[in-house]
Image (cartoon, rainbow over all chains, first blue to last red; front, side, top):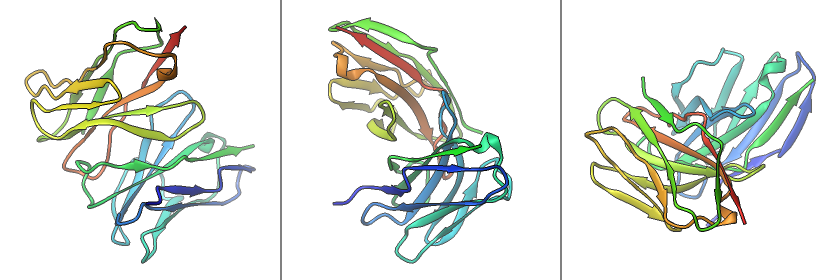
Length: 114
Length: 111
């Protein structure tokens, strides 16, 4: 059974650019959640996709957007990058769109914005 | 909304010492409760979970009991190893869609 995978592992961008991060969910999972983890902090919820629809969103601006595909993989897009967007971006997959379900995390994508 | 308060770190112990990391939470309804562990430079790994009151989650010698009356889910291990050095996160998962994390507790175990 393949776990959650993310790509790329590391990324360097400059302020104002756009970035796309990718996540493949664990086999049999239909839900993907994205989290942002700043250095020394706990992960903060960005949004969740359940069966290709946005199922919930945290306190992030609209320049953070996402997609989920029919195979349940997902993308996180960030437009107009700011320095504070530098962080580890984690995706997690689960079955069903509820927080009570166990979420399994990928290794993360580390984004540095210069 | 949901929130979690974790014991402030860092926590430094000698090998074979007893570990307790306190966690209290606020959540609507009856959440599931999770402990995740993050090793340096890695993502989060599920350590253990409990889904209802008085349940005990356990894994790799770690234990935590879901205490509804005190809204707590304290993590314990009887004898820590150097390899347990990591950041530990307590997270309630409620009837909404997300996990809520605190800042985490950094544990360092010295030989």
